[in-house]
Length: 189
Image (cartoon, rainbow, N blue to C red; front, side):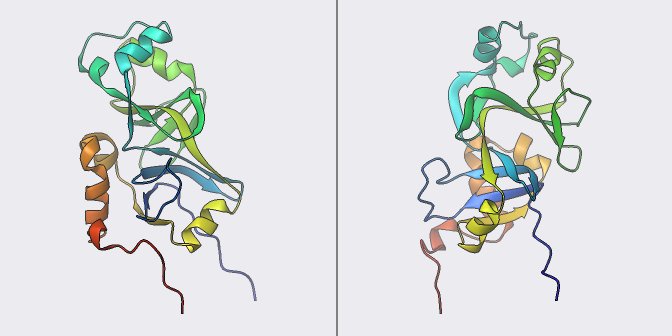
């Protein structure tokens, strides 16, 4: 009998269960941009840094076009490569290093997207993060089996248009769950 296909969590949100021991992910909403046999890659979308886009662009020596983007926060995308920038965006566009997720959402790690943003020519919606969340082959599936995460289909509304401080509660709400009623540990019979 063939084994069942592995789940694909690409273009899904992962919601950390209340018992999440890893402080990098406690209370996190993670957008999974890519999940395959080699592992998974995503960004935490509800944790900001003290850095604004204006400050980040100044540090990487790119002028930022005037407008409201300068006050936007830079996110802490995860604990891996926190010195490197990642841009979650819609529409997908054509950039040098982009992972195409679904529904026109992409995750780009090349400088060309930031150069376009600096000229006012970047994607219509974006979230800039330092670092990413990564799982090796089978690691995410193992964490899911141990009830470390809940998952639900992702959408641009929650990523780009929901206030940061409301993202976790709204994601749980879409599942019809009040996180206050979740148990810190899974039961086993």
